Length: 225
Image 1 (spheres, rainbow, N blue to C red):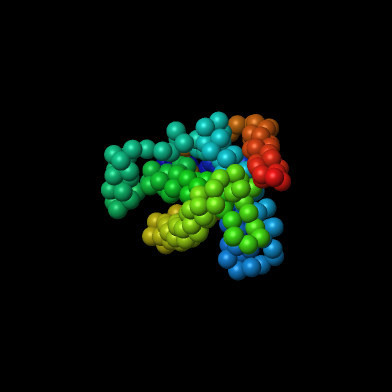
Image 2 (spheres, rainbow, N blue to C red):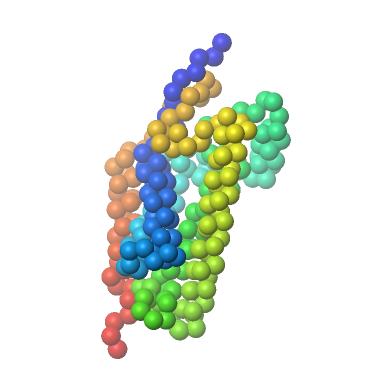
């Protein structure tokens, strides 16, 4: 008989990035849509989000076992098999991200990256200008601004879908996806501890991302003519 044990799955960089993104999304919507605080804070949350998503992309290549894209990104065949297994009595939860969840991860990261980049080129035509908005034409900046507003709606839709999926797994499969993202651990009898990379590597990569974002914020705006 198999013995269930607590195994490590999500490392600290993944967990911190995940919850920091949650806070940034809340801050971005609060400042951009509802006027809480000031637009200066909208920019700050946007810069933080850009650094976070750049880091998560790098950590998906160089990071710990279940954080890497090669660990969970699968093709249509694997997704189809997972869906068939999901409906069967032999359903077995994935250790890390399942093949279907991988699509949500990729979509979320891609949309957040697109949203933060579009914000760099956007403006409100009155007072607030993205750091790169004056590097392009007025028409181009207006187009980026439209994409930024569209991305805001798409991101909100994707978040609702994500929350719905988490709830469905909890209610239908009795699978808690939230607790492991807090503790980093799961109870399993069929797997061992994940191979985690050094937190110093994560710190170095995140510092590099912060430097890139800082450079954009400082040297991106066009100087006086």
